[in-house]
Length: 277
Image (cartoon, rainbow, N blue to C red; front, side, top):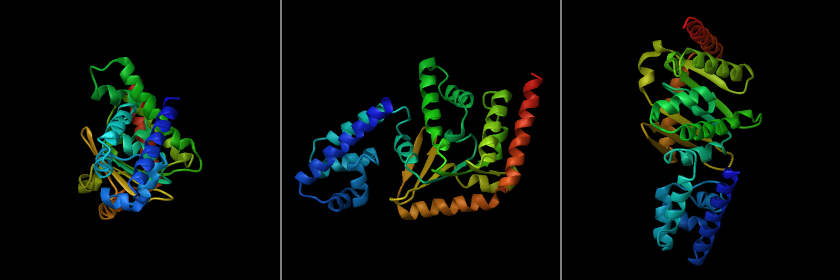
């Protein structure tokens, strides 16, 4: 219900943007040129399909002379989100993508995380947080994972570094369950998983966590994440560079069949460890 209310508010944001743009006598393309995005993006903002980043909202305020209205609205909506502010826009796009490709160098991607794994990660990053805060973050992550229950969209391809299989997040029992979950999704042909083995060496140093998203009616986008920060990239040249890097990682990774065998082997290793503790 809260998510629906937030979507309604973003729709209101789009309606106001359209009204202010038309008051200034600008087309979507003309406004897009002035705030350095495409006219198609402006149209998606107005329809509530795509949510503008904060810097775009600020530029819109300057061009339309709206006294900071769109910046304030954007900040309020971001604060109401269950996601970190730097990930909010990427999370919204994730739900619209027809194809998602990810590389995870150390931790399982959010879309693959079990509740216990997500809880362990959230608690490790927020050791003094309340139980309510932890559970809110876990719930938000599990809500995102509902995407993978849709048999039609999106296509999901993930490359996991072997470190993500070996790192005992939450303990061996949690890891055994987590890897079993990933293996089940792969065997159900819901996700395509490859593992970049430790033996691949320097390939693991080429990038941090990366997400590439493709859409039916918009250009592809890349999202990269570091410590408490993220970058959403839609410049075609930058997205192409990220795609080229991802292609190299994919070439160095094990085949899907060998990857699944390694995931199930690692799950069994964690399971044995859990049984002896």
